[in-house]
Length: 137
Image 1: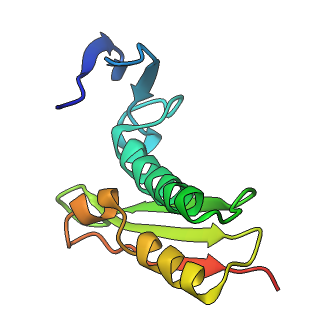
Image 2 (image 1 turned 180 degrees about the vertical axis):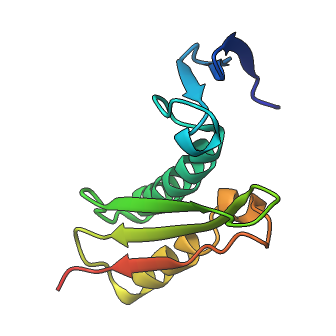
């Protein structure tokens, strides 16, 4: 079963997007470096957002199954666009901070997820995706 997402161009380089199942909405805007105002997430920002939230969500799913406490984990993604045409995402650098330590099995599973969540597996191989995991001292 697919998930329907609809979008409408609302003018001024903006789009309105509706998630069919929930009815929740967001707006996008073109980035400042590509003729927009940068007042909303851009379409390529949403790709970066999808990656970082997929990593966190997938870790959360596995943690719940295993009974691990991953509350307080957080992540940051930095999106870099290509310097030369064609315009595309060239790099998505991810930093993941784990608030609590996990057993060695858990650490390995977090590493595996962080380097291969479903969104990351869906990205072009031409996009660099370095991931750094920061464990508590």
